[in-house]
Length: 72
Image (cartoon, rainbow, N blue to C red):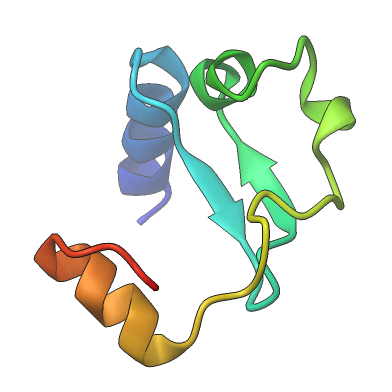
C-alpha cells in the first residue's frame, strides 16, 4: 500500500495537471504545484485553508458539472 501511495503522490506532484483536495466547503486541504500556479498563486500556503470555489455546490450541481453542464 505504501508503494502505491508513493507512486500516486509522485505522479500528482510531477504532472502539469492541477490537482486540489478540498473539504465539503471547498476549502483547500492539499494541492500540487501545478494547481498552485494555475490558480495564480506562488506557494501552497497562499491557498491552504482558503475556499477555492466562489460558493459551495449542491450534490445535484456537482453531478451536472461532471456530466458536462454548468450550474445555474
